[in-house]
Image (cartoon, rainbow, N blue to C red; front, side, top):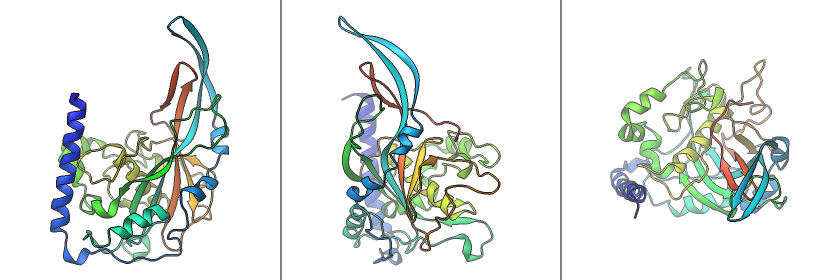
Length: 323
């Protein structure tokens, strides 16, 4: 076993041990609720397929270069093309134990006997705190659908059509409600990542102008409920993309990154948009006409990939300035 595999196995084992310990000391008042909402179980992996904004791929498709490579005695020429592709579903909700997705609901209902930290996820700006502080539970599901649009000149990662639960904040409640996980893993590193995203939205540390990636909790100071919910949902995907001390159910192979794409599915269907896009004249397409009366939002996440057919497979690109 390689050193990296040993390290990953050790962190996974530590996370499982931590999960058992935290669940054992969870407050008695934090038992899971029987949640209900008009959004609950309204989607699944099959209906979600019909919600995908296929135009997002073609609108942002481009050729960025060309390459010649060899395989044995064969010489291959290919264009290097770049485009977004859906890689997962993320959501945020204000009612613990609820999900837009039938797959998520099934998982959460199976955990109703597990004690959770906190009864609800209802903190929002309408409670008169005056701080813009909001809180949501968040869930991440890995999912790379086969859109049947042809493989030629489309950068597409390996398909995993089955939607798989990767992260549920309810069972990671201790860390989802405190910045403790990051401090345990890298106390000095978290301090360097604490920046003002309104003034200096560094792509590696901020979801553009929507807010910071760190600390990776359910709390976010943001006057827009929709942007706060989007950041919370994307943070869930980022947690599951980097196994460590956090409690996860699976992996989310393609980390959400600034400048990649996000598409709202519920409460309103919208075309994809760049993660962290700046508001112009006080308006942002993420907010326009899509506020949920229950504070519940479901999104499809698109990573940006490059590929050169015959030379190298789809590669996830790094963060970029939102456009």
